[in-house]
Length: 296
Image (cartoon, rainbow, N blue to C red):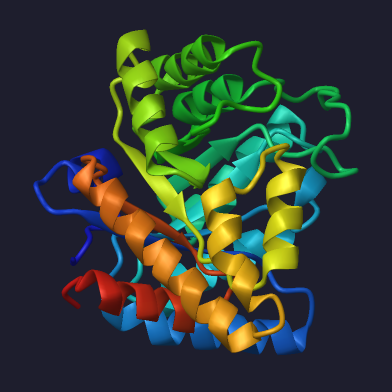
């Protein structure tokens, strides 16, 4: 899909086709930088609706996030979406980042509360002179910059939400502030995504919600990742992977198959597309694309 970089992603997603997007993170060293740009180069021919670049805990990767997003805007045909969080920034600093992105031709932002500097699960403390909630950040962005805004959504509810209904009301607040689309954290079950969409609609959050998809290529690291969001891998997934405990190649193949089946189920449930968490590698994403028979 060819994307107009100034066009609303909501409009793009709702044009009738499906949105397929990729997420990257800022690397820590030169080797990681080379791997990232190899993945971007290999995935560019797939013409994703957009690609996003994450922000480290506490805003730690601010400069690298901005630099990578700017380079994508300058040197590729891809539509870049820069992550921006409330953590560690005053409102003046946030406005400055938005201006820097705009100067580089970046017109889409993912507005997130973000993880505390100590990482997921640590106590949340607002930054003095900054904003507290993602809805506040969306409001600030819409008030000060001519950009399109996406937000996060949580299939099993945010870990700090009092209830699933409360979580839906938070999504509605972000929508009311000006959010045009949402991307979920990694979906573990299609039924969780369907429940989120139903709760969002009931709460009046009228925005397209893209489910996040990540293949399980290493059971230990995936289990740790899921635990950080205070969730559990589905028992049926663990049961399918258990026979491959000492067979990395077999586990990887089964993980790709599980992700493919989940992607099929999400699209069949009416998802407007899929958002791939690539971990800065392209091979698994390309294999799932092929399995889903997505046209390139």
